[in-house]
Image (cartoon, rainbow over all chains, first blue to last red; front, side, top):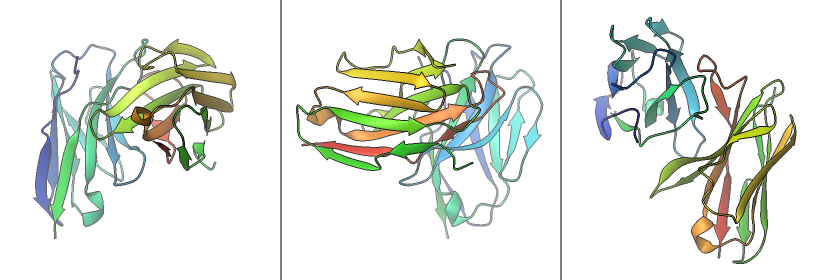
Length: 110
Length: 115
């Protein structure tokens, strides 16, 4: 069963902000929200994670809804190098491993 | 640290042969994950270890697949006998622990082709 739901693809223009949505209505209280991305011909790469509060790092920002049933990854100024598949994943402390869904294929137009 | 190191980067083998993929996790990381990626099925979690012990191997497709972690710095994924449908990119990842508040780091993958 898919724990998260993401759009299959999104398109944005270079140097504009990108908001990637993720729904996770069955999230439990101990689940962290993780985002990874996979550039062409590379392994997945960690982007950001959070539990309840919004998070910022050098790569992106993570906005988490108050009920935690959805979140948004924000790339503040997209570049062509941000074109990748972005995965939203729930990770708790139980027996579940890090399970990937189909992700969102982000296309950046010059 | 050099990151998660996988070997070989590419492997071409004939159907029926044994294939062994290797992974060296980041030093100090206690959790290790093996994945398989194909166009049709995406990224599939095959098995993961915590403190060298397999926690969940429900993703291992068949008895032809086996994984070991003899110590904290080395893991292998073996396919015996290999079949053409095993052709895929296999990734290894490690994290400090399996709690949700730590990130995972991935290797560059092994591209396996079974002919």
